[in-house]
Amino acid sequence: MSVWDFANSNLKSLHVYEPGKPIEEVARELGLDPDSIIKLASNENPLGPSPLAIEAMKKAADKMHIYPDGASFELASAIAKKQGVEYKNLILGNGSNEIIEFLYHGFTQRGKSSVVASRFSFAIYKLMAELFDVEFIEVADKNFGHDLDAMLAAIKPNTKLVFVTNPNNPTGTRVSNEELEKFVFSVPKNVVIALDEAYYEFCKNPPDTVGWIKRGANIVAMRTFSKIQGLAGLRIGYGLANSELIGVLQRCRQPFNINAMSQAATLAAVSDANHEENTRQLNFAGLERLEKFAKQHNIPSVPSHANFMMLNVKDAHRVFVDLQKRGVIVRSMKSYGLPEWIRVTIGTPAEMEKFEQALLDVL
Ligand SMILES: Cc1ncc(COP(=O)(O)O)c(C=O)c1O
Image 1 (tube, helix red, strand yellow):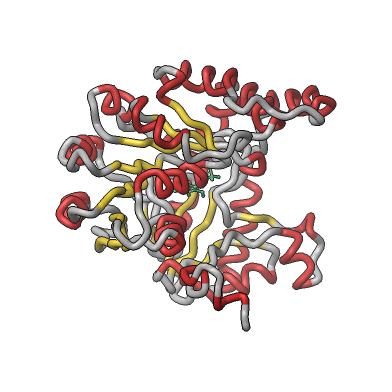
Image 2 (cartoon, rainbow, N blue to C red):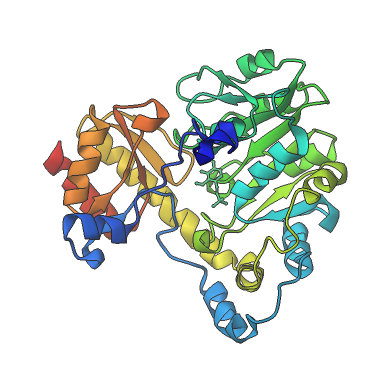
């Protein structure tokens, strides 16, 4: 007898999430010096963590024998204040990934529910649908972005969640604030709008998500400290919604889902407006530079509103492999159904220089 005869049968065919390749792994595989490798594969912050967060972690280190505050009260209150909502309108997650999982736990039922998402959006939504035995309704894209009218039309009576990723990963597209506002007030009241805003802070003209929540839209807006504040390693994200929706999600979480080190660091990072602004400015300049480079060398690109950009290099897998040999890790979009495209995270000017040289070499 195999363990698979009695394990959850959904797991057998589950697609495994392919994260960006770690520097150490590439160094081991190719016999390279890890210090010579740059990673532009996971939309991480090229400036590193907020310096205030680093200081706070040093101070917190000797208290790590104590369990964390299960309610993360101080941190949740500080984020709520910054976002202009109350404590009861916010839930913290072990990365915003965990909030996605809470949504499936909280609103779907095995074998009975469906969720709607756009083609070419964040891979985790589909993996979770497989895991939770929920029908995944994938709606065709419109120029790599969300076709909100088609997504609205795709909602079925058993649909529980509709995922909108804005700006979108991996394509970097966004929907206009007007289109999104119309959409969030048109979705039926028994469907939760899972508005994934992992890249919200990189938008030049961000939507008034909190205003829409206050006006009664059924939104759970998901944000993260992984990108704008450079704390991806600490795994911390949050959801914003009306208190009833938050109440459902709170029941889905483990008592200590946010560890004490994350709470200490993130509390400091919340007020680090400098780091946030430096990150935004570096990103705007990097996007502009990469767009110019792509145009100059006739490499098709998708205009991006996030901290990464997709480039059409004809054979993404080959380019991905050849770039690694030159110490540059990017992401092939093959597993996303875009075999000609790579996705490149915006790095420091030196990193962008190295990437551009390496790309020209391999093309
Ligand atoms: C669209 C989107 N949502 C969610 C996440 C998860 O972020 P976190 O690190 O907060 O779990 C990512 C990470 O890349 C993302 O791109």
